[in-house]
Length: 416
Ligand SMILES: Cc1cc2nc3c(=O)[nH]c(=O)nc-3n(C[C@H](O)[C@H](O)[C@H](O)COP(=O)(O)OP(=O)(O)OC[C@H]3O[C@@H](n4cnc5c(N)ncnc54)[C@H](O)[C@@H]3O)c2cc1C
Image (cartoon, rainbow, N blue to C red; front, top):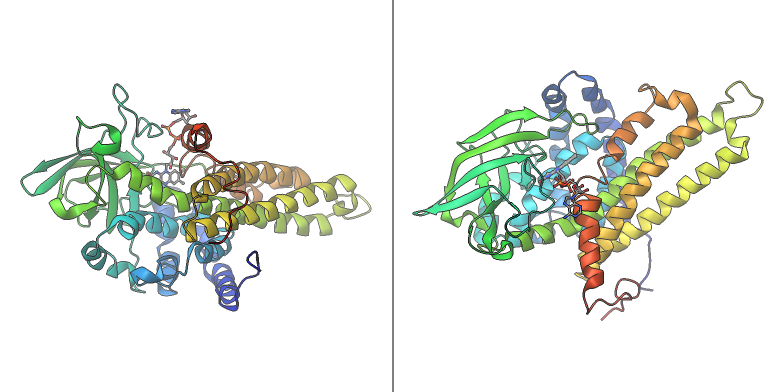
């Protein structure tokens, strides 16, 4: 009985609790998306984010081994599907914080964990963390050897301090609620300009207040309208020599490890958006006649489109849960499955969202209905968490080219 997709009683409770919270707190918080500027919209989500923290949702995404309450990525996937299907912006602020903490959780020493994690385990205030990989000018080729620029942000050791200089962009919540910086930033930096990328790049942790972090602008993104995506400068930001997460020079490998689980979660984001769009469209099709005799669901073309959308949701969720489970048990298939979940889920969501808009018809093009917002959010999924073309398909391609690649590893892995 190893293959069993039923939730445990505890997971079902977690799902229902998350669903209720999303309905009661995150749904009204969507109002923030109507405000004129990106910073105003983000600021308006703060009460909802504080409520997420107070209700323990950040703790629920931090592993038990680090003092949190998550028994694994499947648990996180259950929570995230519920929250993201109602409010992608505020949920991404939560998950962006989890991503920012991952280098500490995966690569940090016990001492670093004890120092850095407590404020994120408390159920008070609005702590933010960010994983700073992306740079203006592109980051798909972070591992490029010269003459490619790769990671341009540098960290130079002077005495017992690292001095960080560079620019970052698109990093979730990085400049915090007040432009002065998130509580914790994990920053991908070049620490040895002479070494090859796999030995010359490291992740350094910067804690607030970070003197030298200069806000430039908040990007006016197509979707996730109430989520902060800043562009900012790092001007001689100074941190202790001990602030390297993982090994000096091991930054690209640690980044890869952090982004494996994140890929599976992007697939879950896709499920969440498709699910929200499907529920709305099903209700519309059952009740709207659009001037005809029968509700439009009676038209075969409409019914078939709804059937195809439902198949896409269920198949994507299965693949994502499979990927999350592989990550949880540290299966050799985890990376492949997580990337496949990310690529498949993200591209399926964009297709399904537009298909469902065609079912609803012209009214779907009015922001008074939710489908336009959901599509705007879905458009990010193939682009972020490692773009599907510049990063994710390349990773899969590299696996397939490897002489030791076994196509059946991901298909039928036996319990040991
Ligand atoms: C809502 C949101 C939240 C985000 N949060 C974060 C965050 O918290 N932290 C963070 O660091 N970033 C974040 N990002 C940025 C995001 O993760 C991107 O995935 C990342 O910047 C890489 O983008 P890219 O692949 O388009 O790279 P780019 O370097 O901009 O490449 C652009 C395009 O060029 C092509 N390309 C480039 N190189 C190659 C190649 N070698 N082979 C094939 N094609 C190539 C591809 O078509 C690629 O899409 C966020 C973005 C969004 C929208």
